[in-house]
Picture 1 (cartoon, rainbow, N blue to C red):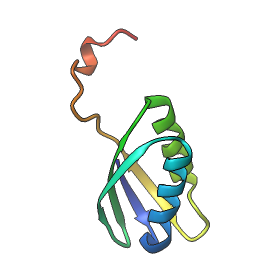
Picture 2: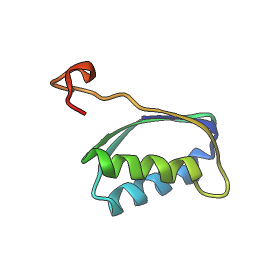
Picture 3: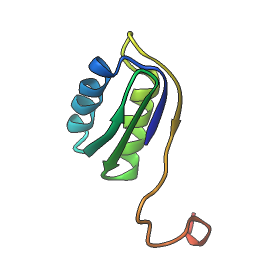
Length: 83
């Protein structure tokens, strides 16, 4: 997951960690600065969706412009999955 915007990484990263932990998601942060945070989140897709929604609303001291998600190690390409 890559979060882009006007981000206060010093407060937003711990905020993301708290919310991910509440949802039972594991996370690994690879990069964080004033305009981009990159992390890997592992867990049920529905709970990752909830974390993404929370991050898009974010705490009051950040402005999220965009969240990009990419599925890693997906055993089946998306065009072959049953909907």
